[in-house]
Length: 212
Image (cartoon, rainbow, N blue to C red; front, side, top):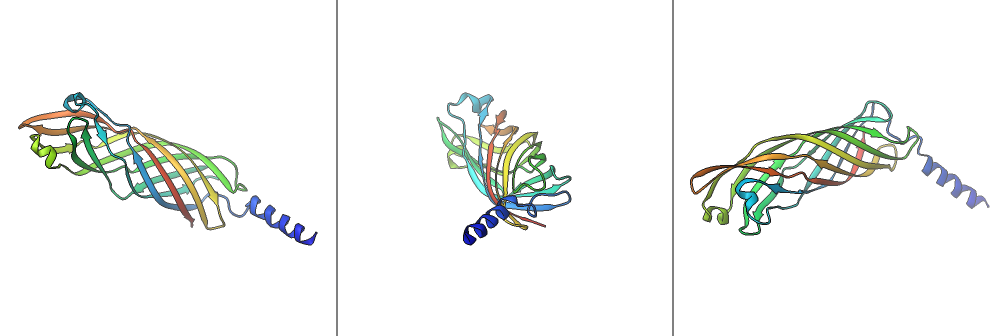
């Protein structure tokens, strides 16, 4: 009976988590793999080629969150640069694109300051900058050159959940959807082209976090 009572008290302490929850004024950082899966599309010449494709990519994701109240958080998503291969069904891979998509979110955390599990939703704005873009030999052999992409601003949405292990550490998972529309500028046979490109990725992140 004594062992049962001790076990019950330990379980109650674990589940209550009153000393562990997100609270107003806290700052915490999460880190883990961030997987970008574009839902791509294109107009212009690229759109007329069958099977326009932008590859998935996984990088280190970082989020920095400040709790303005027990339920309202402000989060910045950052990451190491993503590297995507671009191609079509007709040509295969023709280019490589690098991008950074920092995203600022306003979040609502469900539950209260005694909750150990904190689901949340967020809305915000994404800025995506493109750099170090270029055609590979396959693209160059097709007469393509001078590739660049216009930076993008767009809306973003998010759902996620945190599980607080103890006062300092947590684990979590989050999913974002980002509106990323850009323009691909390039030359084909010396003629300038400006094609609309839609990336609109889903971003999945699994993380461990530390609270300060």
